[in-house]
Image (tube, rainbow, N blue to C red; front, top):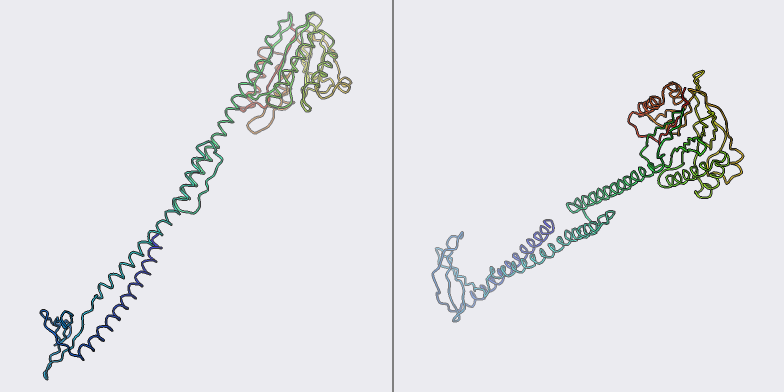
Length: 430
C-alpha cells in the first residue's frame, strides 16, 4: 500500500508543479497584456488605498487604484532623477492562489479516491486469503482433518495457513494414533478372552504321573492353544497346536480346531481316525491358506504306552529316558490340518507307539520357544531349546518348568514374544 500511494503522490506532485507553472505563466501573460493596454490608453484612476514599496526592487512603489468606476488596478511607479514612470496593471478577477487552490483541491480529491481504491484492493488481498483460511478452519473443525488450506500469497497469511496445515496434520495423526490404540486395546482384550477360552480349564491328575503345563502369552491375538483330554478308559491326551496367521481369523480358526479335536478325541477312537475326521471338518470350514499344526500324545497310565501323532507340527516330541539320561526326538510324518480334503492327509499321517519307563518324561511345545528373539533379533532356535530341555529333564516337574521359563525370559531380556509359548510335560514317577 505504501508503494502504491508513493507512486500516486509522485504523480500528484508532478501534476501540481505543472499546473502551478501553467497558472503562473497565464497570469503573467494576462497581467503584462492588461498593463500594456491600460498604460497606453491612460484611463482616469483614483487612489484606493495606501501604497507600499515593492520588496527586492529599489525605487519601485505600488499603489492600489480604481478606474472606470469600480475596476481595480495596481499602479507601479518608478521614481528616477529625471522624473517618475507609471505602469498600470489591472487586478485579475480571480487570483493565482485561488486558481491554484482549486487545482490542488481537485488533485487531493483524486489522490483520496485513488488511495481508497488502493486500500480496498489491499484489503481484498488480505481479507480474501483470511476468509479462505477461516473457511478451511471451519471445515477442519467439522472433522475433516485431511483438509488442507487454500490460502494464496505470502507473508503472515501464508505463515498462518502453514500453521493451520501443521495443526490439522498433527490432529489427524493424533486421531489415527488414537484409533489405532483403541483397535490395539480391543485386540488385546479380545486376545485375552480368546486365550482364556482356548486354554485348558484344569490339568488332569493321573496316579503315578506328574502332568503339568506352562504358558507364556505373546500379547498378540493368536489362535495357538494346548489342551488335555481325559478318556473314559483312564487314558490322558496332551495336545499342543499352532495356528497360521494373526488376529481374529486365527483366533476363530484356533477355537474351531480346539472344539473339533476335543470332541473327536473324546470319542475314544484310534488317533488316526480322529485326526482324519478333524482334518475333513476343518478343511471345509476354514478359508484357503489357513491351517493348524498339532502334536498329540495319548498315554495309558496303566502300561505306560504312548501313542504319538503329528499333523505338520514343527517341534518334535522330546522323550527323556531316565535309564540312560538321554533326550530323543520323535517326529512322525503328517501334514497340517486344513491343508488337504483328505487323501494326502490320510496317506501321510503316521502313528508312533512307545513305552514310558519309570522316571521317563515327554515334552510337547509350540513353536513359540524356538522363535523367541533377543534384543539383537536372534532366535533361540531348536538346538538351544533342546539343550535347555536336556539339561533339566531329570529334575522334578515344577523346577523343570520353572527352569525352562527362566531360560526363555533370560534370552528375550524383556523383548515381546513373537508367538505364544506353550510347554506340556508328563513324567512317569519312579
